[in-house]
Length: 192
Length: 192
DNA sequence: CGTCTATTTGAATGTACTCAAAAGCGGTGG
DNA sequence: CCACCGCTTTTGAGTACATTCAAATAGACG
Image (cartoon, rainbow over all chains, first blue to last red; front, side, top):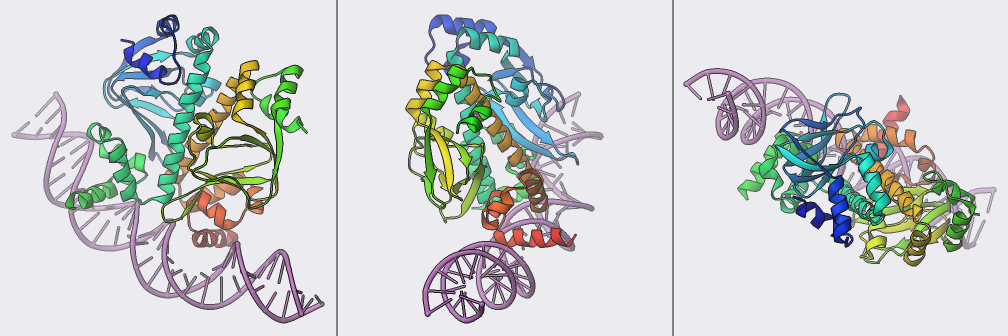
């Protein structure tokens, strides 16, 4: 049950058996049904979750109700609104299960306990955020510097499993185009 | 000399006099001339710098040589390629002084020493990255969901001092439009 | 099988880009 | 002091990429 998450955190730092056992004792398994929300805008995010199975998206709505997908998250990824979680402020995000999804979650108390007992996790979490930042920098670059067609090509190359699991509507929103235009891009690429 | 930076780090956690004194002892002041580079793509970033005076931009070049500005940084902001710095990997970024700029910098050794002697800084740095991530999430949202005109309006409202210090060429690149089109946006907004 | 939703297709439109040229502006030297 | 140079910004015409709206088609699910 904890193999996946233990593999994940040991990518950043080697923890010993006791440390991992303590870490695991703090995790709470939870299941979300497809289409249910883990978080809605205006709520405080009280979890950092590791996905053992399933698929989740994090999105925003603007004033006119237009959706912007910030992240897709699948098995072996973490999901949270880190800022809301850490500062216990209201989130702007919606986090929604796109499939039935199993998570292991930390709440603010258990995370604090973990950091107190095993301070090396502080570094682990920092490196995770750093990785996240790096991904966002890349995405900003690609959306500024590349055409929609190039962004889509990059996306299916980098995340080949996502298009099979997620509707084009959501992928279009992630790429920053309309679903209609994504459909035209796909038609064009399929012809080649 | 250290007031600015001490104010900055104590926004996240209250350090005592000795801790701050030790922190300050690790900082190295350095000055960059206008137009000089602090970092070029392909190099490893060996600094985390706090700007006491001046203005800096972090940008990327794509294959065709098109520039994308990721960050402008002015007084009381940090500047670095955090990922390159922490993992000691080659950077994709260029970091350039837009004015004569004074910095206080940490190198990897001094940062490590700091974290070892004053572990609370680990949290401080994590919160700084988190803030950074939050800014990037916002920017991605605005570039996906808003028109260039709205992005420019937001930008001058949020960072009113930057347009006075930075060329429109660079601002256009930050906003993800051409300089010509930014000029047209400005003409339109001025008319109103 | 029928209903509901997702995807595709097409025509008209709009936002932003390219390229070229003109205007503005700051610095330098005569 | 002003004339000239180089660089930045503006303006304009034509074009391309992406959107909107509407309708048709395909797929998914009870």
